[in-house]
Length: 135
Image 1 (cartoon, helix red, strand yellow):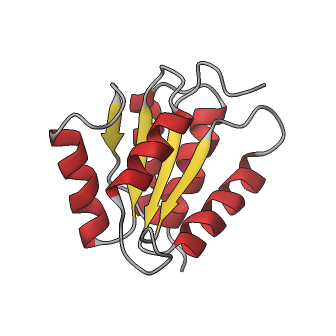
Image 2: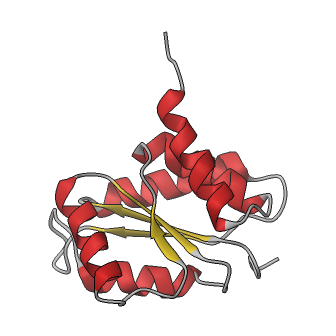
């Protein structure tokens, strides 16, 4: 399955390696059936640390299947970049910045999206990751 009709996930990080690694981990943990489309948008165009609006837009378009796109961002300026893209209507319709921890939220979002949850359900699952206790 190609993820048709599933919410897409974009992971926005200051590091391409972090975004790709979190995407790979989330894919692995969500496996066992169809996996929703997920794309990493990390680092600058020249391979450095930072955020790149064009990479974010391209990733959102890549995972958009018409059911919405959930964007999770790691740190301050990546959040601000996504917010600016949303304000400027640069992202696909139904795109939403999700307030969630980056790693745990990404896994929860991809699992929910892969199970067919709508965008609101994906957002809720990701945000719920704030309550995960580790001790």
